[in-house]
Amino acid sequence: MKYYVTTPIYYVNAKPHIGSAYPTIAADVLARWHKIKGDDTFFLTGVAEHGTKIANSAEATGQAPQSFVDTNSEYFKTAWETLGIQYDDFIRTTESRHAAAVTNFFKKLKESGQLYEAEYAGLYCVGHEAFIKESELDEHGNCPDHGQPPEKTKEKNWFFKLSEYGDFLQEKITSGQLQIEPVERKNEVLSFIEQGLEDIAISRRTAKFALPLPWDASQTIYVWLDELFNYCSAIGYGKDEAKFNKWWPADVHIVGKDIIKFHCVIWPALLEAIGEKLPKKVFAHGFFTIDGQKISKSLGNAIDPVELSQEYGSDAIRYFLLRDIPFGKDGDFSPERLKERYNADLANGLGNLVSRTLNMIERFTPELDPDLPVASSTLVQKLLYEAGILTENLDFSSALENIWQALGVADKWIEDNKPWELAKQNKTKEIEGTLAGIFSILVAVNNQIAPFLPETHAKLTKLLEARPIKKPQEPLFARKS
Image (cartoon, rainbow, N blue to C red; front, side, top):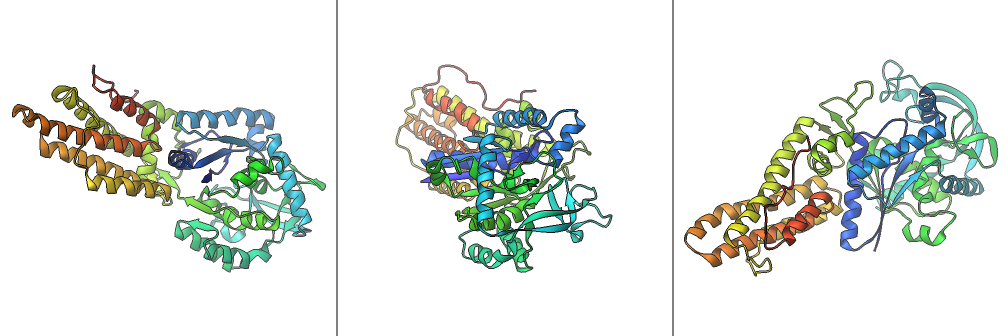
């Protein structure tokens, strides 16, 4: 089977922070899980490099826009490498392959008869790179997300007849042909559609640093539509038909809940207009704050995931984000809770269990055959089987909870059987059975943590394969500073 998973693409007007790392780690776990299962898997991430917001940020640094995005896109690649993220492709919207695919797409959209030219007067939020309604502003007339008033704009643009797709979208969503998760996001989208859809502008006359509209040189492509098409441009749309047909449609788009209107309303309607299949699922993750405050450059709390991983290691960041914040829900990131999770679950949890087990094997049964038949734990088997299903369903927090419950079974097994007491009584077979049982749980758990904690999995694999142990081993988890 094939599996195609995507992340949102991230604006390069600033360096990546822990909030952008969150969905990227989730997508990486999914991709790794499906590759382990044997599925033919493609994992796409990337960056959005067009738009007025990018042009303004470049201007503020005294750089040309292209030079600015060339530099900043590398920050994202470095961050993802540091966090152990193994994407199959990294798309940049300034790449020629993307521009060619978008141009092809807009030509088809024009041929569909779903576009018309008209004048637009309204409000445009540069921070969102999106039009915004007056009813969405706060009491001060500002965008609630950016704290700035939107620009008043009046210009002649090209429009897409989104208003004609309400019934189509409702049918696809309610039938499950387009899955939207979690359910509260699905209900939110359906409620939005029921209020009546309005036609949307697909071009701008005043946008900076944007792709030109193929048939109207006075217009540029609305940056959000340019960005949405990355999911198709990266897999060969309009250039490599075999590759595109192999991977499309996407099995899951992972997005933030603030962009579900684009992904669950506008994107599927555009695809239908040009005769392409809809994505199978859109999963919207929640937001999280930093110690109760929204992530903000002005507050100086945009935590750099690279710096954090230099202290704790990448696996600790991956574990904490997916264990502590249920995917799809809002949550709070706390450096103190990260430290607590690291110590309790990783260093003193998994790390200590591995150290105790291997030390007891070395001390009491150094020639232990790891393939020795043992009484298996039905509870461990059940926990780990369910963890796999939970992972596939993007319930990462519950999957990790199951895995750590399995480790708890192993800890209890040690305490109940007390190998050190059995050694005093020269009960060799009982010691071997106990330690072989614990060893088998570690092997099973190690297989299950592979997509979540790739570095730990690699280290633990070497430890478990080094039978018998000849010398003390390095700890699985050690703070780097």
